[in-house]
Amino acid sequence: MSRQSMAATIPPLAASCKSRDKLGPMTHAARMSAALLALAAIATLVWHVQLGLDRNPGRTLAVELWRTGRYFTILTVALTGALFAAAALRGRMAAGMAGGLALWMAVVGIVYHVLLARELSGARLVVDQMMHTVLPIAVALWWVACADKAGLAARHALWWLAWPGLYCAYALGRGALDGRHPYFFLDPARIGWPQVALWIVALGGVFWIGGLGLVALARRIGRRS
View 1: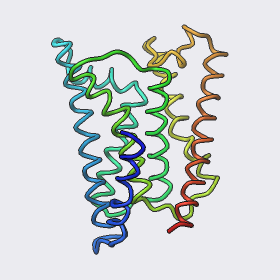
View 2: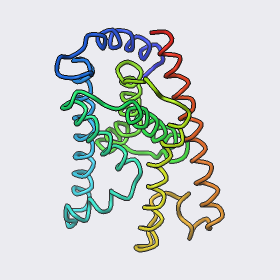
View 3: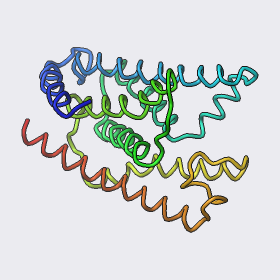
View 4: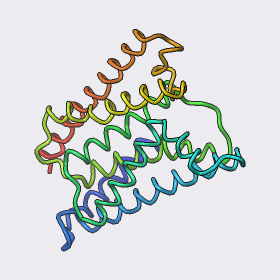
């Protein structure tokens, strides 16, 4: 998606978010777009799992879910789908949670395209781009246009480290049990523990700086509105 098309998309969506839905503080447009985001995230995950089963006919659903559940992308897309579905139903999403989802999905896309992108084709390419490009951009657009940003502060940039921090502990613990690590930068057998520690600190810095940037953007948007 080009910058011009993104810029053209935000104003009409933002304008539609000004009319409050009677069922809650979230606007009708925000709730409907949240529902579409949830549907897109869940459908993408289902398609991803089905493709894995198609490539390995002897694999059970439980085994495929366990295999694919080792990845930060998969878990973050699942979290996005669940929380956007809840927001669509309840008509609200806390500013801190909305900001966290926007940040985590943005980093999913950035890290993938910078460090992990691979050559794919067909349905696998479509699913891959949905998870690493389309959904991160869609969540970012929703956050800019529709999310509550009141009260976001620098402390939130620290709170938003909790999800990637928990994931690192989970991935390393799981890797110690079964010997399989999801990413090269979390594989101590491949690069050594000192390098793993450096990668964790570096990626933590990316999340923290990105969070501070998100807070600054929220304040700027708040002043303009």
